Each structure stands twice: as C-alpha cells, then as structure tokens.
Length: 93
Image (cartoon, rainbow, N blue to C red):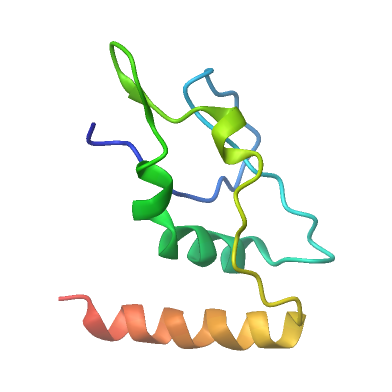
C-alpha cells in the first residue's frame, strides 16, 4: 500500500513490471515536469482507483480515460514549473 500513487519521472531508459503504469507525454504538447505536477495534484484521486487483489494495484484500463488537468500553453507550463520548484526549495528543511 505504501507505493500506491507514487509518481516520478524516469530520466533513463528502463524496464518495468506489469504493476507499474506509465505515461509517455508528447513533449510538443506537455512538458514532462508539468505532467508530473499535474499527476501529483491528482494522486489521492488516482490512488482511489486501485483494485483489490492480493496487492492493491492500479489498473491501467481504469486510468486510460483519466482526465489530467493540463494547461496547453508551454510558456505557462514553464512558469508553473519554475514557481513550484522555487516553492519546493523554500519548504525543504
């Protein structure tokens, strides 16, 4: 249960198992860092979509039609990333 809803950005090629859902953003439309923060803001809702088996996993088909809040303007995405990054640096102890 501790890893449900974990969100990250892979910076290198990797392999994953079937329990991990991935998104590959079209970089012409959405900055991967912006997508990260958009998904982070939805994490509790996304984790609520998990299915119960021996392990609580998210189901890829339940996530396929998830509407992610996206600002389509790349300049606004960049500004948002700068501001949230600055904020995160200020709150770290």
